[in-house]
Amino acid sequence: MAQAEGRALQVLKAWNLTPNMRRVVLGGDDLHGFPEGSESGYIKLIFPDAPRPRPDRPAMRTFTVRAFDRAENQLTVDFALHDDTGGLAAAWAKKAKLGDDILISGPGKIKWIDTSSDWLLLAGDMTALPALLCNLEALPSDATGDVVMELTSSEDAPEVSLPEGMTLHLIINPHPDGTSTTFVDKIRSLTWHDGAVSVWAACEFKSMQQLRTYFRNERGMDRTKIYLSSYWKAGVAEDEHKKIKGQDAARQQELEAAG
Ligand SMILES: Cc1cc2nc3c(=O)[nH]c(=O)nc-3n(C[C@H](O)[C@H](O)[C@H](O)COP(=O)(O)OP(=O)(O)OC[C@H]3O[C@@H](n4cnc5c(N)ncnc54)[C@H](O)[C@@H]3O)c2cc1C
Image 1 (cartoon, rainbow, N blue to C red):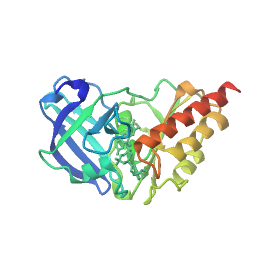
Image 2 (cartoon, protein in one colour):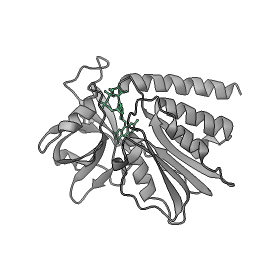
Image 3 (tube, protein in one colour):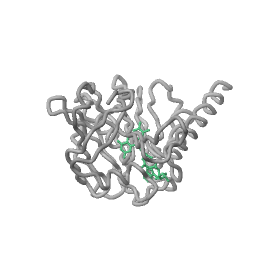
Image 4 (tube, protein in one colour):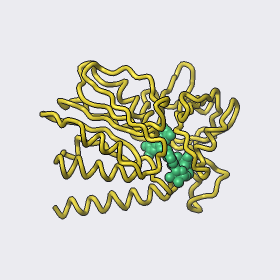
C-alpha cells in the first residue's frame, strides 16, 4: 500500500497491561521504513469503514508511539480503555487480537519536555501516559521536580523508575468524564520551587484549560517552557474535539495578543 494512504499493519500481540490500559503490538511489511526514535510522537489510526467526518477524510484517531523496535519490526501502542461505546479506537483495541488489520499514518511531531530548566513538572491522565512515560524514560539522572498521573484505578499505576530528584503523585479518578478537579487541584497544590521550570502536561480538555490559566496567568510562565495539550474532550469524539481545540487555541491567541 502506498504510504500516503497509510501503512497496513497487523496485530501481533494484544493484552491488558493494567485493568484500563491495553497494549497492542503491531507489525507487518508496511512498517519497514517507519522512523526510529519516534517514541512519544503521535500516529493516526485510520478506520476506512467508519462514517467519515468529512467527505474527503476517513475517520482517524490519534495515539502515541509507546515503543518502536526496528530490529523486531514492532510498533507498540497503549490504549486507555473507556466505557464510552461510541469510541471507535477504544472499541477496536478492546477486541484486538492476533492478525487483526489496522491502517496507520505518521509519526507526527514529538514533544519532549525541555530538561534545561532547574525543575520539571510532568502531568498526564491515562491517555497521556504513553507519551508521559516516554518523556520520563528520557529524563537526565539529575532531573528534579514532580510527576502527576491521573489514573482510573490504583491498579493502573505503571512501572516507572524515576530519577531520585523526581517525586511521583498518583491521583485516582474512577470516572474520567471531565467533571473531577482532583488532578488539577493536585498540580496547583504542589510547591512552586525557585528557579526556571518546564512543564509537560496532557489531559482532558477542561483540565487543560484550567492548567493553562494556572501556568500562564497565575504563575506567569513563558509559553516556550510549556507543552500543554488536551488529548480528548468529555462528551465529544475526536473530530469535534479537534475543532473545539482549534477554536479555543485561536481565542487564547487573540486574548494574549490583546494583552
Ligand atoms: C497527540 C495525542 C496522543 C494521544 N495518545 C494516546 C495514547 O497513546 N493512548 C490513548 O489511549 N489515547 C491517546 N490519545 C487520546 C485519544 O486520541 C482520544 O481519547 C480519542 O478520543 C480516543 O478515540 P475513541 O475512538 O476511543 O473515542 P472517540 O470516538 O474519539 O470518542 C467517543 C467518546 O468517548 C469519549 N472518550 C474518548 N477518550 C476517552 C477517555 N480516555 N476516557 C473517557 N472517555 C473518553 C469521548 O469524550 C466521546 O464521548 C492521544 C491524543 C492526542 C491528541
